[in-house]
Structures are given as C-alpha cells and as structure tokens.
Image (cartoon, rainbow over all chains, first blue to last red):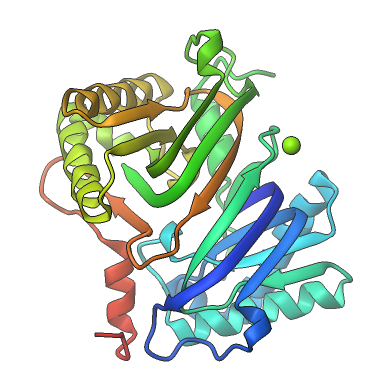
Length: 162
Length: 162
Ligand SMILES: [Mg+2]
C-alpha cells in the first residue's frame, strides 16, 4: 500500500459518476462528505497487499495513528486514490482493506470519513504546508520494508536543514 | 519521472518555509501563486531520469500537452511533489528538469506557473472530478516504457464501463 498523508484545513468530495461498472453501493448521503482540520489519507492498495490484507490494515493504522498524533488531530479521511502505484490490487480486496481501516479507526475513537470506492469524485483540499503536512508511506506485508520516501530523499541533500 | 495530473478549478500555493537548507532562490512575488481552470501537474523527478534529462523533459511535455488538449486548457501548473516516488533524483537535477519543462511550455504559448522547489508550501486544490480529471503517468528515459497506471488498473476490473 502506498499512502499520501496531507494535514489539511479541510477535505471535501462530491461523487460525479461511476468509474467502475459496479462501484461500491452507496446511499444518497455518501455522495458528498467533508471534514475540517483533518488528516487526509490518500491510499493505493497494491497487488502485494493481497498476500496478507489483515497485516496491511494493521500496519496502515499504525502509520496513520503515528502521523495523526504528531499533527494532533482526531479527524481522519480515508480516501481511495489509484494514482500512487502502478501495481494496484483488485478493487474487491482494495475496498475490503479500506473499509477495515475505516472501522478500526472508528473503534479507536477517531472521527473518520471514507470517500466511496469506484467513483469519479470532485474534491477540494487545503494542505497546511508545515513540515509534517505532506508525508508518504509505503507498506508491504511480511518483513518490515517500510519506505519513508521523503526522509530518504532529503538524506541525499546533505545540506538538509537540521 | 512520476506525474499526477489534476484538472482543477484552481490551484494555489503559499511558501511556508525552507525544506532544504539551500532551496531554489525566489523573489517575493514567487511566495504565492494561483491559476484558475488549470491542469495541475504534480511531479517527482526520479534517479533514473538523470540518465537523460533532456529526453525526460521532452516526454513529460508530450504527456502534459496530450492531457491539456483533452481537458481543453492552456493553463498549466508545474508543481514539484516528492511523494510520488521512492527513488527521487538529486534536487539539483530535479530543479533543472522542472525549470526546463516550464520554459518549453511557455515557448509553446501555454500560461504556466511553477511552484518553487525546496520549500514547504501550503496549497489549495479543487479537482473537477470528471473522468480525465485525475491521471498519472510514469516516464523513463530510453525505451518507451511508459506506464499508464489507471488504465492498467482498470483492465483488472473486467466489469469496466465501456
Ligand atoms: Mg491555514
């Protein structure tokens, strides 16, 4: 799984149309959604995640909770986003994983919204722009081969601000 | 290079602070920027791009022009974005590539803004949400090994809307 975590003043979406012939079934009130002061988590479930979906769910929640505590928010937006990977998993398993993440975060008393899967959606986002406001994470089942892309990249720049 | 192309009602940014010790030098008027009715192109320059930056520039421009013509806009926002790849190139070459893309698009009569490189930035984005409003592209120098992630992913879903 690849995740892009954006600490935002707000994220809102509006369903515009089907992107899959059989997208997730949704009710009228799921066609729009908004959260303010939110950690927006854009997620691409990958093929490799199908090897152990439960483990990927747990690792994803750990990363999300870690970032949420650092940016001090209890509001989390789970947002399916196919553009972070070129090795996407099946829509069925992707949806199961995203729903499970939503459920488990709710059990942990976060205020969670999840944007529906399989639709074209308009969205508005306002990224706060502080040093932790944009982060990305890669999660894989099995060995802890988590990559933290930005710190990795910044290491190359030896003039990194300390 | 990985690109995320978002057809947007607007994209605006505001520089908040240095992300590198020596970021790109900018003037006061580059600290904020906005374009309406814009193709926002978020870009991660990758290590592999250093093999042939000129070729990557040309291929990137071809992709951007292709999408811009489909969504019928002449407004293009070149936005450095480190979160699309775990194999980032050096900041120096990344900046050169992004500047060259900006220049060449301007020569082609597009209305172009480029957000500065090496800064934390707040940004506001409004994605239009039509079927071509979110696209991603991977470009590599050498053989035409361009991946079009979303079509690839959708192929897996055999119930794809025709
Ligand atoms: Mg603000």
